[in-house]
Image (cartoon, rainbow, N blue to C red; front, side):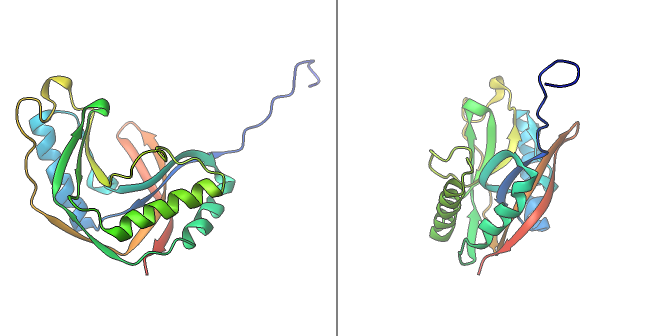
Length: 193
């Protein structure tokens, strides 16, 4: 009991909202941001900025800040060779109003890496979001696309010129929300080798 007669309050440890991702080069991120801007002009919604473009490997949400070194150590144990992705298709998920860019063919090293990461996180006691679903590599271009103008309803999805991406590193990222949208801070970087 506290001196005032009430129950003691437990102080929650500080947390961080984190995810693992592939991070494109500035040139590729800028090209994808241009696609996002054009899509926003056509469909509405909020376009992703070049500095926020990424391909999520595993989203963890809020974790204790004290767990960040454990996550970095876990990531260093994941082994995968560098690989090339070709961003060559656009898609839309109506259930969450999300317009995205992805690849027609997922390279085996990416699929294996994502699965190894999910399994390692679960074995270490973490709960990755959507661990029960098939991994669908994508980069979010638009959020909150209005229902009235959603892609694929009255016209087919546009084509995208293939954008090659040599993936040689991946990152652990901390996400913070603000009035301009999310801001991301890389807190761990891991090489594919």
